[in-house]
Image (tube, rainbow, N blue to C red; front, side, top):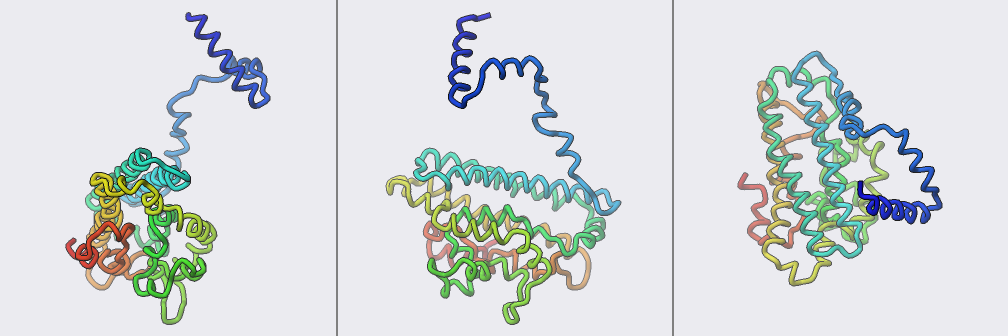
Amino acid sequence: MDSTKIATQLEMLNQKFDAIGQNTSTHLEGLLWAKPITYWDYIQTDALLGLQTQRTVLPDEMVFVMYHQVNELLFKMILWEMHQICDNPSPTTAMFTDKLMRISRYFDMLTTSFSIMKDGMEDEQYMKFRNTLTPASGFQSAQYRLIEFCSTDLINLIDNRFRATIDRNTPFEHAFEHLYWQAAGKDYHTGKKSYLLDQFEKKYKKVFLEYMEKYNTANLWQKFKQLPEQDQRNADLVKAMRHYDYTVNITWVMQHYNTAKKYIESVSGPQEATGGSDWKKYMHPMYQRRIFFPELWSQEELENWGKDV
C-alpha cells in the first residue's frame, strides 16, 4: 500500500470538501457502508429493459418499439455533443471538429441501422400493428426537431414556399407556423391543423420556441463562422460539415423514406402515414429542400438537392 499516495489523496479530498463546506470524515464514513457499483446498477439495465411495451401480440412490433427507442437515445447523444459546441461562447477549432465528427458518426450509425427496420420485420405484421399506432408518428420526435434548431439558422428550416417573407426580425411565433414540418399536418388554405400536429405542439411548442430563439444565433453554422477564417477554409473541416449536412438531410432521410415505402406500398391502393401526412412529399429531400449549410454547396448542388437519390 502506497501510504504517501493515500496521504496526498486525503489532502486533495480535504481541499475538495472544504471548498463546499463539507466534512471529509463524514464522506469517508459513508464509503464504509456504500455498496460497490455494478454494471446493471450503473447502466440502469432493469429499468431500461422494462420500457418496451407492445400494443399488439405481433412479435415484430417489439423490433419497431426498440428500434425507435434506440433512435431516441442516439438523438440524446447528438444533442449532448451539440450543446457542448453551441453553448460554448468561444469553441476552438479542435473542439468544434472533434464534436462535429462525433455527431456525424452518430448519424452515420442511424443511417446504416435502417436495415433493421427495412429488412427486420414481416410486411404483413407491420401492416397490422401500424394501425394501432395511429395517429402517433415518428414525426413527433421532439429531440429530432431540437437537433435541427441546433444545426442551422432558422431560415433554413422554414418551408421553402415562405422563406422570402421571413427574416431575422420575424417574430418566432410567426416563424414557427411556417417551419417546413408544419406542412405534414396543416392545411395552409384553412389553417386547420391535424390532431397529430396539434398534440405535438401542445406537448413541445414552448421548448421549441425557446430553442428557436436561443440557437438561431448559436447553432453549428454560427459557431463554424466564429472559427478563424483560415480554419473555415480547411478542406477536411469543410468536408466534415458537408458530410453532416448531406447525411442528415439526404442519406438518413432517404433511408427512412425507402423503409416507409417498402411497407406502405406492400399493399394495394392509396396509403398514408400513421399520422395522416402525405409522407412522400413530407419526407423526400427534393421537396423539402432542407439544407443546413447552403453556403458550403455550389449553385448546381443546391439546385439538384435530393434529385439524384
